[in-house]
Length: 420
Ligand code: EPZ
Image 1 (cartoon, rainbow, N blue to C red):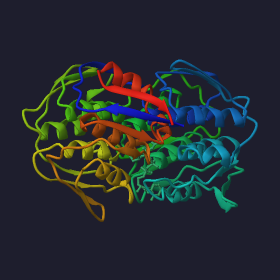
Image 2 (image 1 turned 45 degrees about the horizontal axis):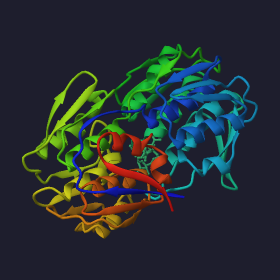
Image 3 (image 1 turned 60 degrees about the vertical axis):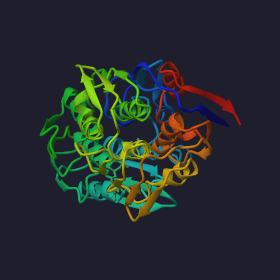
Image 4 (image 1 turned 180 degrees about the horizontal axis):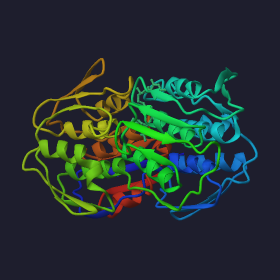
């Protein structure tokens, strides 16, 4: 086991290149199950969650090889349609194989994903939609056992809640369905949009891409002629590094980004007093004279992303005044609060709302990562804390951040990965 050791009170400088989006790479890798040819995906982030999904696809019988940021994948050799518990339990996004496997083989077994630190993470909306498309679904010994021997049927699906992976699962199912599927209240995250574009480029007729209502003309079970893919940049990793520049009041540049995907993040930082030099594929954050407190409410895209809520909470401990953070998407996404408190933060929780006192002088401590984004908030706090902070259980970080200490070191942070 490893931990991160970070010496605080160090300004940052320079620029950092942002990797491909984990949350786009995962559905796109699952979508390879719909392809009749080998495909190459580039700008794939070298993170544990991607490796876990590649292992799952290989277990199903696919050819999957990753070299640097390039993945070659061919699912024509897939023999099994059973995604086993041992791998799925490691990563809930494995549920993204459910739609494609069922659409392609007419039956599949995918282990129920466990919950996780941030919440129960149900998949009822995924299952309800597949049943509406004609699937018969049973839950047996922790597995989703789905059958649609005559294929899935196009129909109208109205999602009771906006669900990112739910939208992606049903999109992939609809691509091979018999007939037209209308999807209402679909997630509009850039990662969902990229999946739509990849399916469209593979010959699927999709209308409404980028909106909350999609019409998908299914291929009646015909596998798709998928093209090579370049994964979009990771707007959440990018937001994390902007927060690192903000919390250390440093001028740094993030490159290989799509600024449009990050407008809610840069707008919130502007409200806190920061300014930006924004170019086509890069953003430079310019220090604030003083950091203003701010109110945050997380919501679906294009609203403020829940995946940077923890990072902003760390930043708010340095603002002038009290900030209120409302976490609207997950019922338990405040696991970072108790760890930040160990470093001297003063944060009060009431239901899904956190009141964050500003002007806090954080002190280094031993802290524990609990989930992917909470862990990155601890790094940000450590960058401004007095002393050397040790962050344990950093396997959470390795799930979604590529070369984390390498990128932070290149920005001048005094960070090391050491063995417990
Ligand atoms: C995706 O998770 C992301 N993961 C999450 O990122 C992200 O936090 C989340 O979307 C919200 O943006 C991937 O894309 C792999 P949801 P997902 O279904 O799809 C409820 C990270 O850090 N819901 O959009 O699982 C659910 O409980 C991860 O990279 C149901 O009730 O999230 C939640 O309250 C963490 N029933 C809300 O909807 C369902 O069937 C949004 O969840 C599905 C979801």
